[in-house]
Image (cartoon, rainbow, N blue to C red; front, top):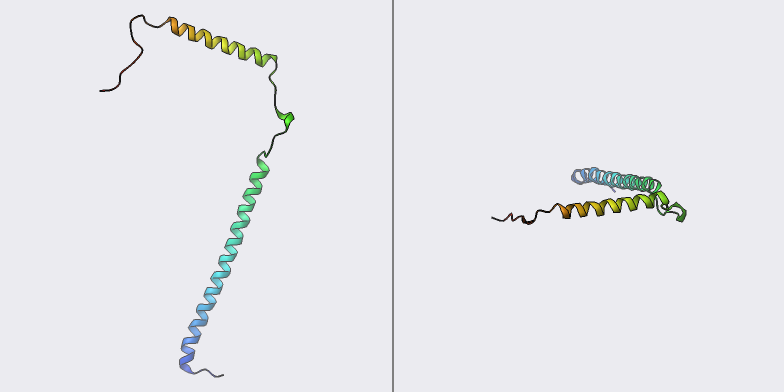
Length: 100
């Protein structure tokens, strides 16, 4: 099979083009693999650092001090609410009209 001059003018540029396309495909597949590996590493680090489930013994119960603090907090809130009710002005309203 012999090629003539005119056939070589068409065949050689096509060969370079085909080689370039093959190289691009190879680079694209390499980039895809690198990206998948990077994403997999990120997921591994995230899974390593986060808690997937908690153990039943990890829950904390409030001790008597915690209960007393809650009671004191509720009493303080109740007293504060009572003081607010007492300090209301006898004839001034509590509604402010911002329209207009």
